Image 1 (cartoon, helix red, strand yellow):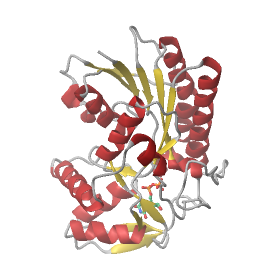
Image 2 (cartoon, rainbow, N blue to C red):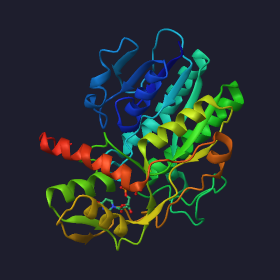
Image 3 (cartoon, rainbow, N blue to C red):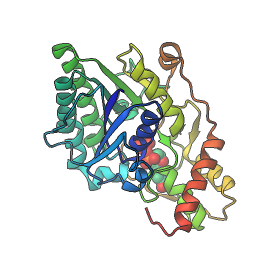
Image 4 (tube, rainbow, N blue to C red):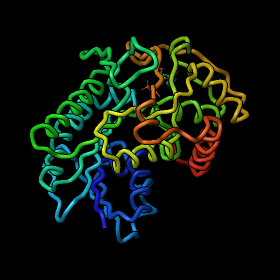
Length: 317
Ligand code: UDP
């Protein structure tokens, strides 16, 4: 039975990855310090004998008994709202935490899988973004704690690959959404859906002309799994190229929730908010035979249903 460590295993994407690995017959160890992850996301797995959860900060030395075939390094706060409230934790988990996770992979001769991000392209001057684009990042800007640390993580991952010969895979994740995002996470999907469902104003930051391309979580996890089992190192973009302006996105959510909320404009949270973002997924298509399957409308309906239940049950997060 293959065995995997998932850092950030109680997070939004980490918990979906644990589900998928268990369904594929893996034994899974999830680690998470729960600063943004939640045991709610893995409560359904606790009785599974092939699943183990360890509350742990992966910036500390990682001890783990037994063999490992994969180390999936997903731990990191990822919302721009966290960039101002948890900047040091973000810098640390993506630098020191990546070093620890690489160390475990090396010690166990496991494949190391890095969850990198479209943020490494910064405020991109090339559109759509191909993996060859080197990016436009302000390393001392507010987003720099995340963008630059992820760039460092990619660089150290390649250093371990070249120096120690360990098998590595780098995925660059574009905006992903779905059930198990935190209602109060501050990102656009939970914000807009939460506001629309509660009848509160929908807060568009800036003039709403900036664009994003949203990928549903099950599509993303399928891309992860294909990359993990492939011969590819990457980096490979995984995302949905369906691009919308943020204003269009607000209108779409208002429509799908039948909400009477008004759309209001607020200042940008960070001055270096990327103006546009859309993945070029040629590599994922040709090398992994992957492309997204879930339409924006279908994915949003699933996500709205999830948040509706959370709100009705009285959760604020
Ligand atoms: N955004 C917004 N209103 C919100 C939250 C976010 O208009 O309540 C905008 C944000 O300025 C950005 C886009 O939506 O342009 C996506 O933001 P998110 O925080 O989801 O992630 P990002 O793609 O910026 O990392």
